[in-house]
Length: 255
Picture 1 (cartoon, rainbow, N blue to C red):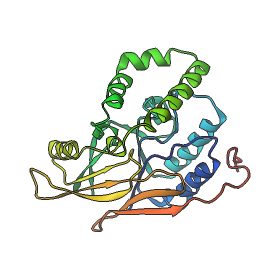
Picture 2 (tube, one colour):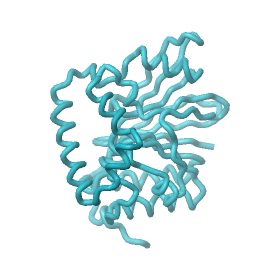
Picture 3 (cartoon, helix red, strand yellow):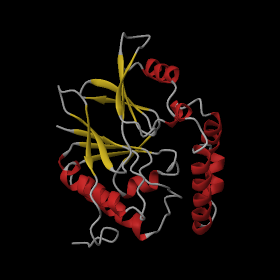
Picture 4 (cartoon, helix red, strand yellow):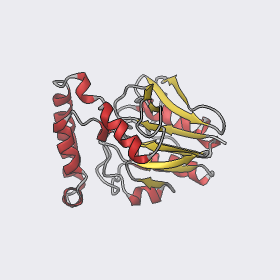
């Protein structure tokens, strides 16, 4: 029995090396796992479940192959793909998760999050996050034509890059008190999240228990990162170098 966790792939047709690494991860690891959890920022940007690009279609096809093979797939939206919805999840046979979600992992309660809600010192982003997750904001956005949404997504992404370049590093990391609060509120000793692109194990001093652990997933850029869990063994954080893409990655055959 094996459960896998990944996040922050930022899949984009302009990064075929990451796309190829993901497809190989599915075939070589996830197809043999019982469960795969994707904890946000799966896509670099997601403009809605009506996304009709060939790139999105290929990703759907590979994920559907995974779930048809018997691996349970769980999907959580992040700050880049907060518009991921039930239609996309149903099309690939996945379960859409709320952020945060507590799961039973081989008898232990584990808190899963994307991680952006923990970065409370970044008040500017937290204000945008609250707006972006409002039902009215999302309805207004999804009512616009696809091309208009694509243009807006590109504009917002450039603005975000420019703003982040001016922020102190600690502002974009999690707030320690918020981590403790989230874990105490959920009554867990283990938290898994992504978002910060700072993969590591972190001990956490909790109020209701003496000690907990926060495990941070890395982003897929030069390396792919995953957490592997098996019964009666410790959670392991793993990485593997991402190789250059071979021809045909963006448009693989149906064979």
